[in-house]
Length: 350
Image 1 (cartoon, rainbow, N blue to C red):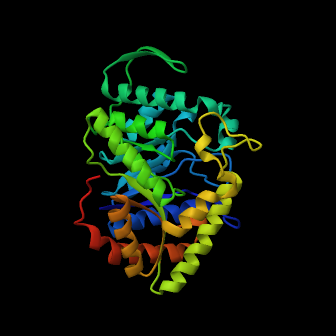
Image 2: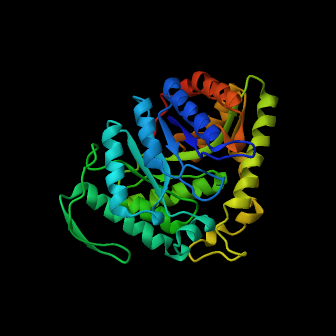
């Protein structure tokens, strides 16, 4: 199994922007030192829900301060980006990091962000798919032309080319939209399961992903990151109390700031987000996918994730809801020293 850390760059009440970056970047350096496989960075805009607005810039800092850990985006919101500029920036980061970039992509879901950029939400899927196609062609072809709905280019050469060949691994964020899961599987892209999915939904998504891989004639041996809230403490009950408290704080911010609906109306292509504003997704998740407890308790939950759901890459959200940096660092250390080693020999076949 593999283990990574997730970084939202959320600014809770009482924190400054610089406080957020200092804490997140300290934790990224700790992840490198503790042996985590990857650090995954989240893009958001216009609200304190997440202030990590430029993942290529943040990734460059990570590349300069680390030597081993892979640098993932979870995710780059493609409808907000010019595909050619993003192709250049990501290729540059891949070179600067020595070929450590993992490109997680998605179509976005927060209405405030789409409104801020003036992008209609009902165009998100078309923009997303067009951008992925252009990225791959820009990275792999000497020159190309493209006549799309949103981007038109004629005989353009995009440089530099990424260090990883044919291009950095692409991951696709999948909430529970079948179209997105099929899209990823047909192209051989692994899916990222976000926080908020119930266990049964993850199993359903993985089953559809496997079936779609088989129909496309592709291999099922892939890392499939699943994002879960994690808090480890020496005392089992204290860990659960603290973990639940800060998970609820995060859940409140998501329900308040992260809704895809406008006045209660969901945009085209977002029907699976029904009930989002009522927090149903977080209530279900608390019962199943919160890894709070002593190292032994958390290890049992990791084993359950692997054996029952098929998760082979645990993406640990260690600082949800503004959890104090000292507690985050202590939790990361316990998880790395006392939980991760138990699973390093476990296979990763889907």
